[in-house]
Every structure is written in structure tokens, then in C-alpha cells.
Image (cartoon, rainbow, N blue to C red; front, side, top):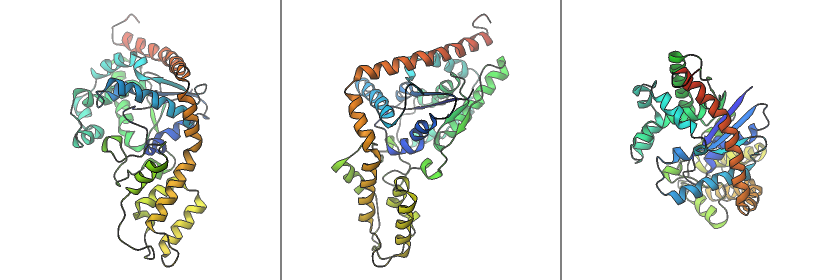
Length: 329
């Protein structure tokens, strides 16, 4: 049976890069035959979050966001990473077979350090915990954005090293990337990769004046509307590509390329982008408010998810302990 697994950090409000790069894959993927596990990576969040109350709030917000956007807890297992302590045991077992060189090549570590994140041991060994997350549930497919492909490849390497040392214990996982390449590369409001860490993100549920102000930050140049332009070089248009249907998008592209009278200016693009974002997430915003009004149900969903996830993780943990001599086989 195919087992799908992915996770997301509750280190900040979920942004549209999270949505198009990963969350929408998770939501759409529920219709695929197989088992689906999605976890809120609160252990991982500790590499950057040092405010306990805020972390608890972010975990709840992430839970609400997934459910509001369409994750069905009857079809997919949603749980907190820290509710499955077996992943930390597996992390240590994997650490004993993982070479330093593999971790030193991690793009995410180098990128975060370059952007001012403290180079803690936890941040450096982050890929081992992520590998344990993936391998604990015998995951076969891991829906991720392109920026996470290396982590899945590292999990493959670690599983291979452990299996070579102790026998056939871990299942080899494979990546499942977004079908639309543009969705896998969502830019930030400054044109760089969208990231909570870089402060260039846009909250999925932003609305009203705050949304308009955020979209207003998108950089432009001084060229007048009538000057023909390459739409792919316009950041506001890159965002429109995420939200507009093909017919409307083709019309915008043609008018921008042609220039002349009636060609849209940057202000028109930003105005349409605000409207499109409001329209796209309006149903989820309403559902989010309903969910926030029933915190007890959110707790029940996470508890049920943790129970299902632990059943799988305990079996994997026990298999690994027996293989390396820490338990009777």
C-alpha cells in the first residue's frame, strides 16, 4: 500500500508559498488510494522558536489552517510531531549511521545560517530528525516542494546506511513534487524565495487593508503601462499566475506584452491580485472562524491522529531496536 507523509513547521503563520508549494498537494492528495500522514513539526520549530506560548498558539493555528483549507481527518491522519516520541528514538539510531559530510551538504542549514539563524546542533542535525519523521511510518511517497527534495534524498541515504548495517528495516521513500512547476517556486513579496524566516511572506488568510498593504510592497519599476513588457519579469504578474484561470491570465499576458493604450499598469495588476486572493481563500477563512470556535474538537482531532500515527511508529521503532541489538528480535 502507498503511504504518503509530509509535515510543516508551526514557526509562523502559514503563507501562500506553503499553500502552493505543499499544502494544496496534501489536500488534493487525499483522493489518492493509500494512507496519508501529515504532521505539525513542533520539534523542528524549536530550532528557531523560543517562546513556549507562541509555539502552542502556532501549532493550533497550523491545525486550524489545514482543516480550514480542506484536510479531512477521516481520510488523512493529522497529528503533532511531539505526540509521537518514537521519532526521537529513531533519530538517535539514524544518527549513529549518518556521516558528518552528509549533514554538511544540507542546503537548508547553510541557507538559514546565512540569513542569521543561530547555528545550533539541533539546526545542524535537523535532517536526521526529518528522516526519522519520514521513515517512522514506512512512508513510500513524500509530497514536498522543491526546496525539500534534498531532505528526502538524505532520508533515503540514511535508510540505506542503516539497512546496510542491520538488515532490511526501513522503507525507501520517494519524493512527490507539485505537478505545476510555478507552484513549486512561489516568490516572496521581495522577489526572493517566500519564507517566514525572511519576512517576505504573505499569510494565507490575510484580508482587507492588511492584504492591500502587503501586496503594495511588491516591487515594480518606473516603466509606464503603455511600454511593452515581458510578463515573466514582472513580480506582480508571477503572483497572478498562481491565482487566475488560464483564459483570464492569457488576456493579461497579451495586453502586457502588447503595451499601448489599454495596457495594464502595475497598480491594476496589484488590484486584481488582491481581489483574486480574497476570492480564492474566502471559503477557507469562513471555515477557519468556525473551527476556532470549537477548540475541544481540534484537540480531539490531534489526539486521534497521534494514536494512529504512534501505532505505526512504535512498530517501526521496535523493528529498528531489534535489528541493532537493543531488543530481542
